[in-house]
Image (cartoon, rainbow, N blue to C red; front, side, top):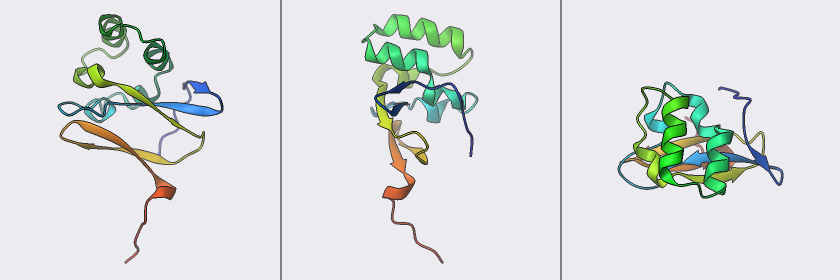
Length: 107
């Protein structure tokens, strides 16, 4: 489990960046940059509805040699700080799975 420090908080919640559109994921397609799921600058750009080209330029500077296909559909999910979660991906579509919202089974 990784603890990444640099995050955006608003109204007591943590911004999580996901790309729910089909075709390409955001963090799931950038395993070399696990911090991209919390990127506070990019999250603020999403909130401020900054245009795609500006976001792409930022990402090219911040995450060189990464794949930015999921950037086109990027959105914010808000979670309470300390929430254990993972991002699932199917055919490029990412979704957030929260640990305490899953019915785990034990063998």
